[in-house]
Length: 500
Image (cartoon, rainbow, N blue to C red):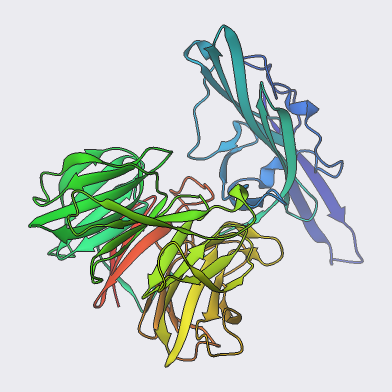
C-alpha cells in the first residue's frame, strides 16, 4: 500500500508575525512488489541510482520530461509520467502490466515513492535455446528538481549494458502557431510524403496511404497499401504513375503502380535496399538515386518508371561501412551525400557516375539530410545531423557555402537551432525560405535572404504534449511545400496541411 506523509515546518517570529505552516507532502517509501517474471532487471532496488535521490520524491514526478542518456546519440526520449503517491506512478501512454510470459513478452512497472522502474522482457526459442531480451528504465527525483535516470539493455548474446541519464522538464517551446495556420488533417502515422498534383502519398510503418487533397481543408483517404515504409517518391512515364517505396528494414525498394490512385498495385521490386530515394525527373534521361547506408549510390534510369534500369553506382570515399550513406541531394551534376559519421560529401559526376570528383566535405556529428539551392543570391546548401550532437544538444540546421569559387566552400556560414532539447529531421529550400520538419518543435520556417543570418519567421507546433508517446523521433518528420501550402507527414497525427 502506498500512502502520503506530511512534514510540517513551523517558522516562529516576534509578535503576530508568525508564518503559516508549510506543507510538503512526500511519498512514503514502500517495498516494491516482487517481479512478475524473474529475469534481467527484475530487482528495481539493484539499479544504481545516485545517493542524492530524494526519499519519497516521486510526488514531483508527474508531467513531461526530456531525458538524455549521454553520450548515446540516439538514446533520448520525452516521457510523460502520471500517478499519485497512493496509486503509484507509471509512464503515460506506455504499456499495461503484463504478467504472462507465455506469449514471449512481459511488462511491469514498479514505484515505491522514491524510484520508478519499468521493464520489458522478451523470451523466445531458437535452435533449441531460450533467448532473453530486456530493457528497463529506472528514475528518481534529485534535490535540484531534475530526474536521475538509468537505461538498461540485455540480451543473451551480448550481456547487459546500462547508461546514466538526466531528465529536465519539457513543454512546447512557444505558442501553437505564428505565421502559419492549420487548414486540414487526416489521422494516421506518417514518415514521409510525396505530392503529385492533388494526390498525396504518405509512407509510414503501417504502409502507403493515398489521399485526395484537392480540398486541403478536407483531405480524403483514397487507398491503403499494407507494408512498412520509410520514404516515397513519385515518377511518371509511358502513361503510368509509379510510386517508389523505401522499406523499413532491409527489404528491396518497392515499385507500385498508382496510375489509378484509388487502386495502388504492387508491380515488383528494385533489387536493392534503400533508406531514402531521390529523383531527378527533369533530366534526360530521368534518374533515381538510392541512399542505402553503403559507401556507394546506385543510380537507375527511370525512363520506363515501372522497370528501372541500373545505370551505375557512385562511390563515395570514406572511413568504411560504419559511415554509410543515409540520404542525398542532387543538384545538376553535383551530389551531396549525407554519409553519417563521415559528414557531408560533395562530388561532381559530370565525367561519369563511375568517376566522381570530390569537391569538398565537412565533418559533422551524424550527417542526415541536405538540400542545395540558391538563397539571397548565393549558392548554399542547408544541412542537418540526426539525434543529439556531442556539444550543441539536438541536431540543428547548418547553412553551408555551396559556391566552389568561394574561399569558404563547404564550410558553415550560418546556423539555426530551435533549442538544444530537440533535433531536426528533414528540410526544404524554396527561394529564400527554408522549411524544416523539426520533430517536437513542429514546422519552422526561416528567412535565408541573408544566408549567414537565418531568421525564424513562422512556425506551427504539430506535437501534442498531452497525447504524444514521448519517443525520441516523433512529431513533424517529413514535408512538401506547394505554393502557400505545407503538407506535413507527422508520426502522431498523420497528414497535417498548413498554409502560410
